[in-house]
Length: 477
Figure (cartoon, helix red, strand yellow):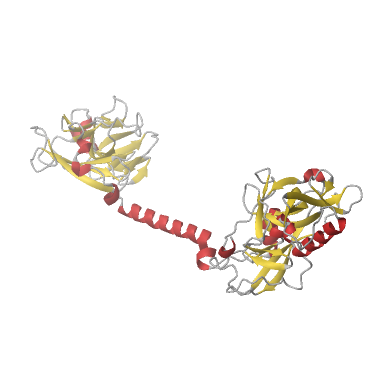
């Protein structure tokens, strides 16, 4: 029997273990006689263990299990053997992750992979697919051993790039493609898929609830007055419309305005010698990102105001600027825009800050008393936003119960003053079955034509038109 056995990665050792975790000169065992031995760690990196306990130096007997850096060493057999060989090493590891599938290898015909070789045992080894995608091999007490990268193993984790031998025979080419070793994404990862689906379901449900809790469940919809103000004020605009009247009489068209010199009302076939008949100011709000503004029909088509139109006709008759013209004859009245412009909230009331707009002129009162104008700059100012709204206040239940409603209000516009719109709150109740225009709440100050009305969700439900509330609904598109 040998007097000492050296263990390490260097070829000069009695037990050579060609593994990175093994130090070049890892440990030494000295025979003390009477089947007692002295095991000493040689300052290795990954340690020496006796029966699972890390040691520096310890007396051992043949019954003790010695491990170096996780590899089990058949050290007593090395003392009895005259040769230095890796065959006396038996590396033993546990599988790093869960085993999914296993195939058998051997010379017997009932193996998954049959190796017809006299040195291969009937049932030589098992190879398992691990959850992490690597493999695990277990020797089944074969006669001539199982080897990974030249080291004899009892069990070892390995990858496809490692060299695996069954006795002295390489594994067959593409052994990993065996049908019993292929991973099934759904079956082998059932729990993972179930948790993933459950997580996706919860995530989707949470997202839908977050975005549609108000629409579907009528929950979390109400905004505070501060939220209404901060979110909606940047959508409000101040509108100015300078306009003429236009009279078609006896085949000719006359424009009605103010004489440039005497400021009196007169009719003239040309607008060049006239100032606009009047100017109307009001409010509105952006409803699209292209600069579309919702406002009252009486701001866009002020000549539909029957009271003012009656006054204008009498002034024309008194001016005698249209020969033979009287109310008893056939004529048509419409209007023409001199200048239509708007100013966004937060800007200074200077002419250079106003932006021109265009609109469709109507000579008769349309079904809806709210209309739109289009900014010639088809985009919003940098600080502006727009209000999303539905054309149906009944379907989206915007008026379903008594609630706080918010009415936009514009302070009197002084030259060089900053336009500062705000909202007044009033608790109102509206009959959703009847859309006859009611007067707005008497507790509010006088609101400008085209002021918008929001509910407590911040939804646009109507505008102010001639001191009444014009609701937005399908019938009035």
